[in-house]
Amino acid sequence: MLTVTDLSVRIAGLHILQGVSFTVAPTGVTVLLGRNGVGKTTTLRAIVGLTPRGGEVRGTIRTGARGLLNQPTYRLVREGFGYVPEDRCVFAGLTVAENLRLAEPRGARSAGGELTAAYDRVYDLFPELRRRGRQRAGSLSGGQQQMLAIGRVLLRDNRLLLVDEPTKGLAPKVVTEVAEVLERVAEVVPVLLVEQNLAVVRRLARDAVVLAAGRVAWAGDARELLRETALTRSLLGVGSSEVATS
Ligand SMILES: Nc1ncnc2c1ncn2[C@@H]1O[C@H](COP(=O)(O)OP(=O)(O)OP(=O)(O)O)[C@@H](O)[C@H]1O
Image 1 (cartoon, rainbow, N blue to C red):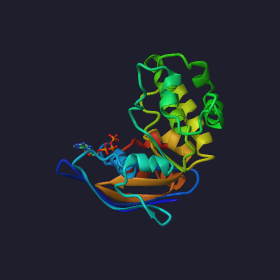
Image 2 (image 1 turned 120 degrees about the vertical axis):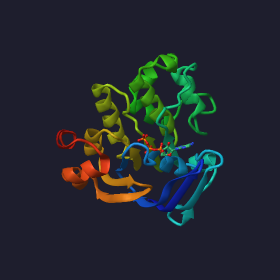
Image 3 (image 1 turned 60 degrees about the horizontal axis):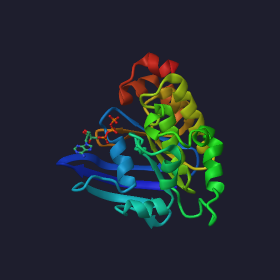
Image 4 (image 1 turned 60 degrees about the vertical axis):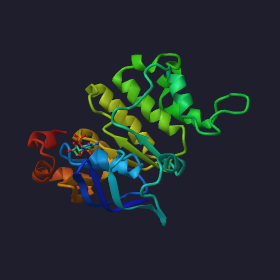
């Protein structure tokens, strides 16, 4: 389980997070919600040690007794933190297979060059990545790029995945496909998810944490939050029909 306590982040003179505390359950999806610009991405980036240079991060981030605040990102990756950023960051000029190869941990390929179980795990979830191995990542659709961004991270044996707005800008059918994949991923590894699509939240999230004004405004059962349309409306600023029908 990941515990974030009193997390404070200042960037460029802005006090963006002002004492954020929450826990990520050891299984399933915990969703991080809040209006635009409230600090959801800043929270994920602080956890994985990617606060921009000059930013100041304070507080504690722990898994068990281990303190992880301000650890270098490579060490956090070795600790089992997988991060899928909002902009996906696939290498457009490289093929799908080359993108995966760049993310390979030790053991993903045998001494003879054969792919091992790490690849089986990724290709079972995303058969299309195998089929499109030779295609340039830049020519994939948005949904396929998202699958590559998630698949790349899953080459490692993660203990926590942090996924930032994976369905943003995708067509409804593709949103459903990405949600299905995340649902399967969350059966084996806990996920901290930033997601604005409430239908996806409803489908995936067991726990919810809502940020407002630099702090946690609400935390608890995600379904309970979505049932309270007035609360959802006031915390997230969405229309009541959006909450009710999503
Ligand atoms: N490097 C930076 N320099 C200056 N301001 C920043 C920087 N990074 C984030 N901010 C500001 O911090 C605030 C929180 O940004 P963040 O991206 O974490 O919000 P968010 O909740 O993820 O937003 P959204 O839902 O729109 O993606 C915003 O006001 C943003 O402009």
